Length: 339
Ligand code: PHE
Image 1: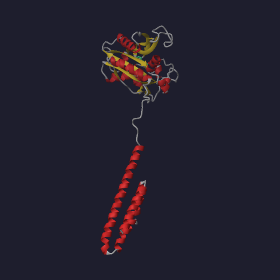
Image 2: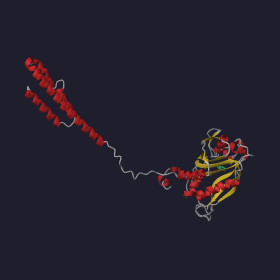
Image 3: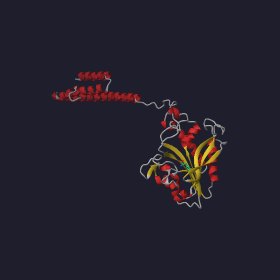
Image 4: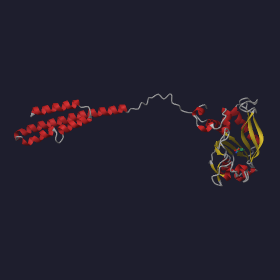
């Protein structure tokens, strides 16, 4: 009996040493310890033994069974551990990878321009206001002294959602919105998208961006407007920049002006950028019309104000010498990465 058991143990060890997969070991376990396994079968023969032999044989077999069980478990654990190790190594993510070539992109030219403009006006004590792009025509037009028969309200110029709701054609309705909820003094700039029913070409787009400015307080005069715009122009385009106000008409300002800056490339002599003019038109402005103040419930005998509005695209195009507006919307990285 003893020899037989020793032989079994040696066999188990041999087979275990030869096995390389968890599956092999499971098979060995079944072969020796399973219901019909060799050790189990020997255990079953105990009943046929003489009672005096049974005790010794029983303990020998049981010892063997325990030994075999523990070496199988041991081998199983080693194998499983090494498989986990292999898995960890093969699935390892190298977080030390060299990312120095990664491109992080840059600001869109319109954002570059807007950020600079914001910084200048915030420096002069302005805050930023915003309003909806889908706007009441009442606020886009009526509150801004723009009567029903004004050409700007034509279908050719304006996108109508309903008769009363439109895509705002200018950032100016935020003037009205602000005056309706805020008492003077008011000092805001309003950046945002605006929409006009234009066809796309090198200088037009049905969607573009404006920055509006509004100041309402006691004793605000045209010289405040001029001084403000001069400060802006000098800070943005350079210390030697001059500004020029040309008479113009906007329904919501009186008097109104179009404002030019002296060309920042040729200093007014005339060049490609200013198209030989020496001047570049950058914005519309004027003193807030008393009707606009009245529509917002502000007494024009006590308060006065000025407003201005500029197109971001136009400023970006002059500043960066971009000759086609469409580049600004095409998201071509070759173009965008130049700024
Ligand atoms: N809203 C005008 C436009 O879109 C610009 C402007 C704003 C003019 C404020 C005067 C005062 O053309």
